[in-house]
Image (cartoon, rainbow, N blue to C red; front, side, top):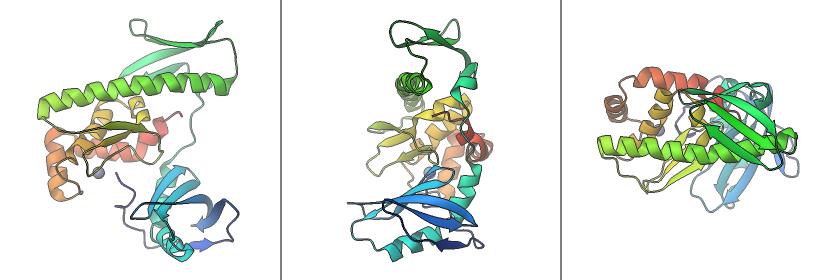
Length: 252
Ligand SMILES: [Zn+2]
């Protein structure tokens, strides 16, 4: 699920406009995209889609603008196709229920003297308690709690899969990138988008298994898909679902 592996589309057109001070604009298929460039100690240029019309380019120090332009042009098809799949985030405050894996929780915002978030498993409810009614504050409060909850859920499922198949991984980190659900480093460290807990359990486990399969097979060769389908017999269906629908389940 890396940005780099998707081949460019043949019919994408791209033209550049004058860069502004910090962020720059470009047109891809007649849609304006804003992007930022971060130069750092990395070997390759990488691209991350942040939202529907924004992306970030990370590149080695002293990379020329011409090389960056060429890279964006090469991946313009990928940027355009993936940005079309991103839907606007649902408003948290219009939701009465929040689904985490296969459980649907009633979401209650309650006035209280102190900030707290309590998940009541038997009640299937999450109580967000605060003295303020400020939506950004409540959202931040809930997000902080859910990231902790995601860490526990992801670790618990990884432990189960490790016990079942004997996977050997090192560190597990959580990220939040719209276009990426997980990654596996050459040092066997795993990264996951914490918001995958909003997906149904089988799709969530498919993402975990995809990255766990990369521990042995780093590429997306036929051998990789063959091995993944041993762990996940519904691999093809789950993969298609994740590609098309997963990001629309993200809330933060
Ligand atoms: Zn992969």
